[in-house]
Image (tube, rainbow, N blue to C red; front, side, top):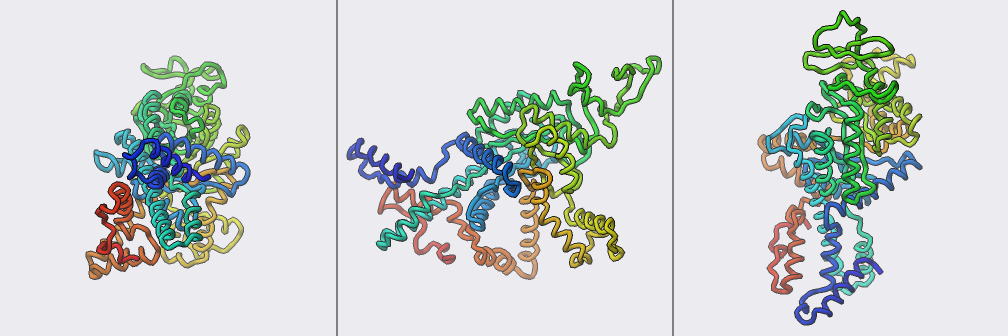
Length: 531
């Protein structure tokens, strides 16, 4: 017996128990509303989606072609339309997640207005966006099921039992739009206790996976900008454990922690790590510092000195008070960070790189996997990279190394549109197309995401519409550029009233008032023009 039928029977039993005052209650309507509201709380969602991520991680360990993907979404509607589109085009949401970018929260969701990605926005805005995303996804479930219920009613009215059975099967096996979300908690917005408190809010809103980075919370920078300052491992690991405690306290026992290291591009640290014995975490962290050997008589007031191998060394300190690492140690520090993050309880790793190259990522992950063979990576397919230029240059370099004549190309000018139809462009696009599959196979990348895609697509689409509508095309700019394409492509929100819940409201009115219900979806509803 399906869950749907069980809910009908349970409601019918309640109706019988409560007598005549419940006569107007329709048990099937109750079952329909329960089906449309499968998840009652954000914790229900977090527990459900954590299970999905853990199963996907186990499947990826067996088969590297089963990597997962996501797009960053800055509004609930954007996330909803993404999942509706995925279901329409692929028939399933399997291995397709949501990503919540701290950058987009700062730039688009702060009450202060647009801000840089420096953790200056209200920390509660992150949890609020998690909740908003899942509110819209739950509404997508209710809307889709509502359409199936109306089809079921039509089949019954027509006496078509075969059609009725077919639609009932779709209802019983309905796949939810609710998918895992990897949510960016930046550097924790404070100390470990502040990290724990914010993590709880995010988990309660529905987040099953939290991404945290090893930068100083009050000096946090976007991973693709200069001026990043990392913290010693003790500080970072305390926050990783704070996330785990938050998950466990709330009963999300298999919550996922993504540990991000910015060390590849971070040349600064605010602290010198505490060393308890030679060769420990702190000692290794400090070994990457840029230092100079000094004699006691050469020291100055206020100097910070370290004893190393029987010698006295002075870390190079900037006017800001920050200490700098030696040039060229980024990869080593990334590997060290990753190994130690897993030791501290992280489930997945995130390495920010300067350019998107399979081999750089693979080389670092190979070192990590010598210690942790199953170490899996989340990789940011970032819009901060100029993908076209990077990959054309990578192909240029590969061809040049192989002895192929590249004299027709100017490596420094490969972004030029004159190369768009060239052989090097075609080969570079092939490399881009295969990048995710290659990274997953070569570097054990479990999850590929694009942090800011819907920020850019919104800007691009609004630019195109504004150019046409306010120009000579006038209304044709909207009709040809938007509405006609919506109709041709089967975009559900061409019926925007339906997308906003008008039909759901009509269904509920009918449950409450029966034939007396005043419904919006009648013959005079202009949405009927869209069939």
